[in-house]
Length: 147
Image (cartoon, rainbow, N blue to C red):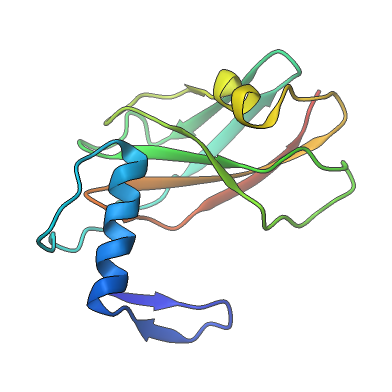
């Protein structure tokens, strides 16, 4: 398994690192831990997202919909920030969709339980990642000021 670090340099994961990476994703998705290596899978990435965020609703419409068979959507979000902020590095797993779920994903109650009720005028940063068989695709990043 080849990864790229923040400086753009490629490196290979050791067997233990690959085992932990795959099984951490499986646990987050609610799947069983695997002891033998699965075939390398690329779940892809989302094409587009449209976020609806208010202090009473939070949902994301995405394409392609529905997701491919066995593919889940991992929704990560940041704590609420100042609307003037343009960079975020603190993303937390908020919700995991069902396999092959259709758009939109309602993540309001999951966000509220984890990070509190959204406040009008604050900004939330999002990272949406597709998951399949222990592997994650590249993130789709977005940000939105709460209306």
